[in-house]
Image: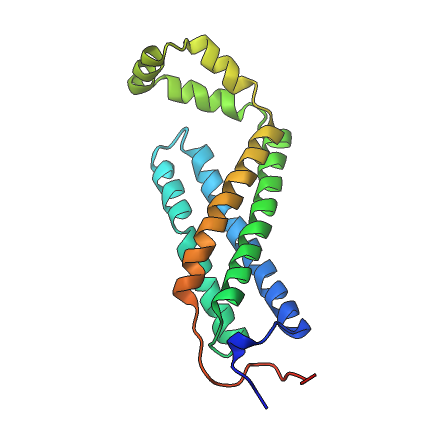
Length: 193
């Protein structure tokens, strides 16, 4: 006898499947974020890449929602509870945040240790920033030194925490929109205890 899917706990096979899908989708999301970061770096010389950076970041919830839909259709027979969708989203954002932070740290540590100095030099040239700093009572020298003192590990850690918090919040909305529960039997056979 089968009970509705939402009333049952996750089996080991379902967990393995969710873990596999979420790992692959985490890698895909980390690649999207890495492309966005590359556009951010490139925006210092080509401002048009700044818009692409913003678009890629704004596409994050839609990308995760799309990947959840793929998981729901391929792995869950087009049904998924809110709790299962939420767990999937948590895992995708958590894994992607860790992968992306490692990529950022490696880039800034090994390839471009002066990223913030170059970025700040670009930002300081804008008249708006000069006005803002003057109104805040901060000298250009102080701000330049503060930006130069940021280490790759500090930046990557900050981005990890930011991505985890934003991913945690977005997960609730994505799971609520993408859940799809039916009264059909669950996709995996269950043993009655």
